[in-house]
Structure formats: structure tokens, C-alpha cells
Length: 573
Image (cartoon, rainbow, N blue to C red; front, side):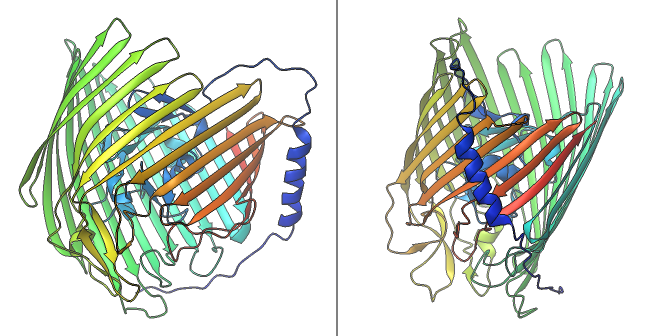
């Protein structure tokens, strides 16, 4: 049992005046420069590489989900405990990796972004088309260097954030230590949070052998209003992530064994006005051993994952996943590149074994223009929640079949323009459904469907004025006479835009816009804005989230934050 404290809303009273000032300053500052600028074109925010989009370190925001928000990833639920959707897939079908190793939670993908990696420790984020069921987000962490950084921010509703990272490198040893703290009273009842994030990475080099050890801890106490049903709920999670990795190269053969352990502790009260009425406690442990071996153009990656859960609701369960992938890369005249791969998956739950082929190719017409093509197969076993969960609002299904898919993708990328087409042919899709609002949600295999769409991106820089525009369209062949909780609530239209330019006194102004319309009909448009100025040891920020103060939801019953003004200072030594 837990104690609950109802928080009061705290408002910065000058917010409306301040937002009017922002709009006025933006409209009056576009024509500050009298000179006719020279036009140049570049990709400023993301770089499209073969089968992946790379978001560089200078574009990492305050958190992973804030970074992904304007990259075409459908961020669902809320800003503190979000789900992600890739190319119209459900959050269960979208994987998370850290340094190339999967960290998905077998209890439920609602916990996938419970990752004890501080934002300051992220080197880059890769959006992968050739990993996971429908795609994956790969978080690449920084190696230790010689730097001390700190970040502090305050905002409406008593939002406060503090971060510090200390990194030091010696001849044979290196270490990075980071700490984050985020607290808020919440913008309405049952949206408060208290988050602690700690991580440490140690590296050692000796006689050609490189080794590393990392450990992270994340604690989240969050108001979970409407997360899983229309109740005032609360959730407490603790996540541990530990990894040992080695890197050895001899006679042209690279060997990289990695050993990873992730534990997630999840306590959930469905209705905080009735303590004990529906209280669940879960603990999952995932032990993963992976070895990457490569020589010349060939690579082999065997891995074994052991998944265990102990739950007051789901019971005790164990299962193993065996995975072997082999890839051969062929490059001709530095213009044509292709990869031929095969993956073998064996799931001890149900005794299923699958062979999953992959083929990708690209052709460089010039240094700045490239076409690419990808086809691959994938599969996903049900989560423990989908199989066994049962409460006042939801019922799992132990007879669920595996999901299977074949993904086709092709596109062209120029230095400033990208166009991408995709089609995903799915079988035995898993969803939570019901036929009317008086029924409980039930986990079902809802049959087969094709999801298809396209993505278009334009990035342009004119001296110090830069703009980015991305549009994503997704549709499917699936019609239903039932209410879908996840699979048929994908983003039908998603448009993101960003403008960045200098104003006065070396101040930089950024405006972000996001329009989203779901296939189920809900739509919204929100804008964020940010002013920043660099100084000798850091940078100041004044930002406004949800500038137009729109009321909207990502999923039913879960309100999204209203307009919030933030003041932030970043220091680097």
C-alpha cells in the first residue's frame, strides 16, 4: 500500500503576457537582416543512413521521448511514462535498444522507456528499420571523456529538474558518473511525479583488450491518471540495468561479447481512492548474453535471453529466447551496397522456431543522392501482460499466437530531401479490444492486415536560418466492428515542423509544431517555442511547451499537459 498526496496547481501568472511577447517577437524579427543571404541546403537535425536515421548528440533534448517527438515517432500516453509507435505499429511492436542490445520489458512495453540512461550520457539515437518487429530505437551512449556538466530548470506546476555529469579519462581507465532528478506537483490531480536517475560507466584498456562495466538505476513515482483505464491511478517503478562488455580483435577477427541484466519492479494501484481494491506488484528479470563476431564482410551474432516474472497478478513464469543472426555485406565500386542476412529465432514458450530472412541494398547516384530498398521478416511473442493479466478493466489471453510480419521499404535520400515508402504485412496481430464501453478489454489475435504509408522530409538552411518539415502518412487494410485500444489507433497523419533563427543579442529562437490525426478521428495541433543564448561556460534557455494551451489527449482518459513555461541553465566545464 502507498500513501497519496493530492497536489495543488501552481501557475506562473505572467504566462499569457509572455506568450503574446513571444509571438510578437517572432513576427517582428524575421526581417532583421537587410543583406540578401546566400542559399545553402543541408540536413541539420537528422542524417539518413542505410536502414536508419541518426539523431546526433547536439539535437538530444531533455529526454528520449522529447527528442523523438519531432522525428516521426508517434509518442503516446504522456510525457513522463510514454509509449512509442514506429510506422503505425503498436508500442508492443516497437523495440528499444541500448548500444545495440535489446532492453524491451517482457511484462509490458509500457515500461520499455524505463531506461536508466541520463540524457547527458546519450551520444546519438538511431531509428532502425532492420531491427525489432516493425522498427527499433537504438540509444548509443557516450564514452567517458574529460568534462563536467550540470543542468538546472524550473517551470510551472513546480516542475524542477537537476542534472550533473562528471566524466574523466586516464591512459588506461575512464569513468562517467551521471545523476538526474525530476519532480513536479502535476498539472492536474494525479499527474505529479518524482523521478531519480543514476548511471555509471567504467572502461578499461589492457594489451589490446577493451572492457567496460556500466550500471544504472531509475526510480519513478508517478500519477498514472487513466493509464490503463478511466481511474485515478498511481505507479511506482524501479529499474536496474547492468552490462559487462569486452572488445577484442586479432588477425582481422573482431569479437565483442556482452552480458546484460535488466530488472524492472512495477507496483500499480488502479484506483487510489480505494487502496487495495486492485493493487498489483510485478518484478521482471531479463538476462541477455550476446556475442558479435565479424571478419571482413561477414558477421555472426548469437544471443540468449532468459526472461522471468514474479507477479501478484500474472503469477510466476520463465521463458528463453535463442537468436542467431548472420549477415554478409557486399560493396561494389563504392556505389552499390547490399546486405544478405538470415535470423533464426527459437522461443521456448510454445516451442516456436522461425527463420527470418533479410535483404537490403542501396545505390549512390552521387555523394548526396542515394536510393535504398529493404525487405525482411520478423516475429514477436506476446508479453506476459497480454497472456496472463486480469483486473477490473482488462483480461489477458494465454492462448495468444505469435505476431508475424514482412516489411518492405524503399526510398530516396538527397542532401535536403528524403522520401520513403513502406508496407508491413502482418499476421495474427495482438490487440486489446471490446465491443462496447461496458465490457472489459480483452487481449485477442485480431487477424491479418497490411499497414502502409510514406514519409517525406525537407531540411533547409539559409545562412543562420534553418527549417525542417516532415510528413508521415499511415493507413491499413483493417476494418473492425469492435473498439481497438492500440492496433487501430495509429497516427494516420503526422506533420512536424521546426524553425530556428537568430534574433538579437546573440539570442537564438526555435519554434516547433506538431499536427497529429489518428485513424480513429482524434486530432490536435500543438506548438512549442524556445529562446536560448550561449555564454562562456554554458547556455540559458526560456521555453514554452504547448504555446497555444491546447487541450488534447494521446489515448482516451489521459490528458496531456497544458501550456508550461520553463527556465533552464546548462553549464559545462
